[in-house]
Length: 309
Image (cartoon, rainbow, N blue to C red; front, side, top):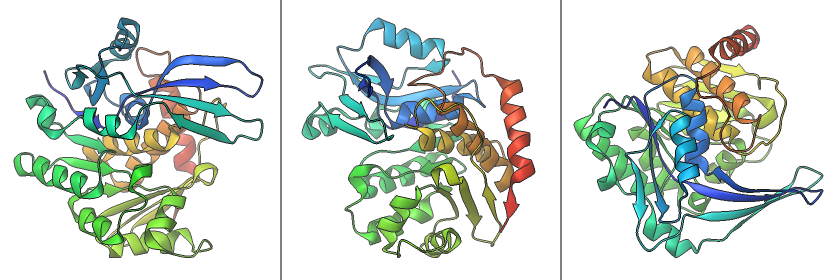
């Protein structure tokens, strides 16, 4: 078994309530799952490192396998239930997430580095959205010890927002690319809300990140390297069904680009295209094989509109 790319993150079941009272229950979600949507668009050797409870249904497992994911890294925790959340959607696009899993249980059952199957450890690239920042830093160090050329894309979890800035500064040099959204970036740096996106990237580069991809929702993204190379990319237009997970999917797409040896612009274009596919449904897309022709069409659209900075 060969795994090229994987997420080391989480798996959550969402019960969604829409503004008109309709519901979508038992929808697979979590940042890890959404990142895999972005990865799967460009790779057919994809692994999932996360933890679930004994109650994970055969239907959910089959859906993941049908999507083309290897599940040897999906750990079943005896005595635990799969993490679950309510998602309440409003007419004005606001959403409220209410976790139905105690934080202590979520942490106790989470996937751990020792859970990684041996083939996963030799993957080309990891998407990491897990643990405290020091825990994630130690994971990166461990991965690089036996796989020095591994590509690592890291994004913060909501629970990381209160951590000291020095934790993040100590983490960044161990990454290939750091990708916060603009709200997260302003929060961790303490910069003013009106700070220009490029200045935000420059701060994170000064902190030690080799590459930064700043995600800005409908405003697209900005990517920049230590050598000053940088680009502004538009958000790829599509029919938006759910905005949840687009940023995670962006990270998955750019991960495969960097891991496949593409340049910064080409890798970032993959991220932008991946995000557009994540917007089109709740949870997993219904395709078994990636829609390569449509992906390449969107790639060309974004490339024609990308601007150097």
